[in-house]
Image 1: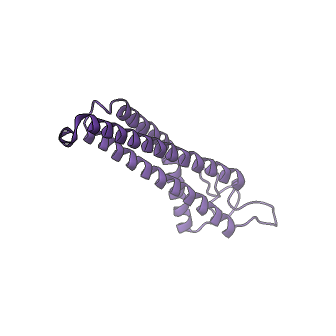
Image 2: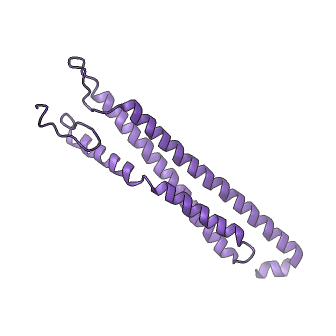
Image 3: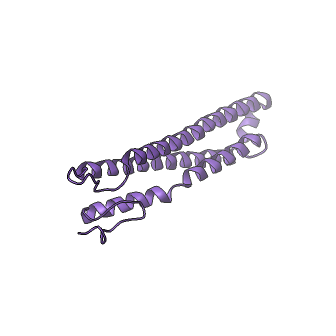
Length: 167
């Protein structure tokens, strides 16, 4: 295959020597990677806003609403963990393909034309960002749960056991 008719993607990969299954796997990994670029930021904003509203208005809203906020935040944390795992899977796919298609010593070209060090570094940064966002949401969630528990105990102590059960 000549240099002129090699199939390349917008990501900078040369697909001419990849098998169909590997090509599909790589395309799927990149699609997942770029489709979730802003969703982790969205998860953090939604969870933070919900927890902040729940904390500020904890004494004015029903405990079931607070429970709903906690459930939604927990779902967002689980989605965040899932995205972090998928990003690390993409890094593993790229590493495996680089092992299977090593640098060609004859003409010093790389079958997969990508600077793997920079790519892995950017993937590692993204994994760190997503894990940090998940950890932040988790810490804030723990704070909100403790805050609600303390307010509930304080309410029960001041109002009595019967009023506590009715609330």
